[in-house]
Image (cartoon, rainbow, N blue to C red; front, side, top):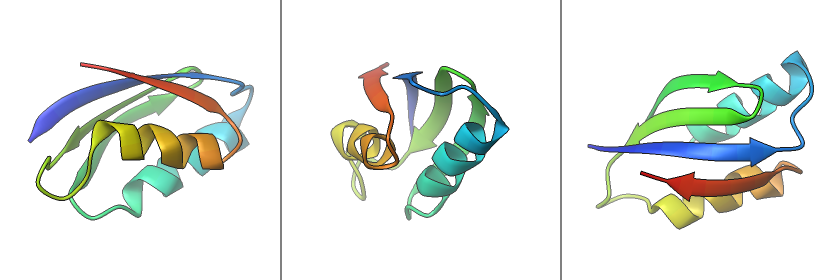
Length: 69
């Protein structure tokens, strides 16, 4: 498992946290450690999903995500 922190802009409330959390939890091979306004910390299986894909999922929820190790 690889650790990943997503810096996320555009999150302002609990609904935002829930939307990002649910999007990430729905992906096979991803364990969500913590989602807070502005950030998400996950562990993911690189053989099943990429950091870029996880950032794209968050973007599809309406936020801007940047992945960093």
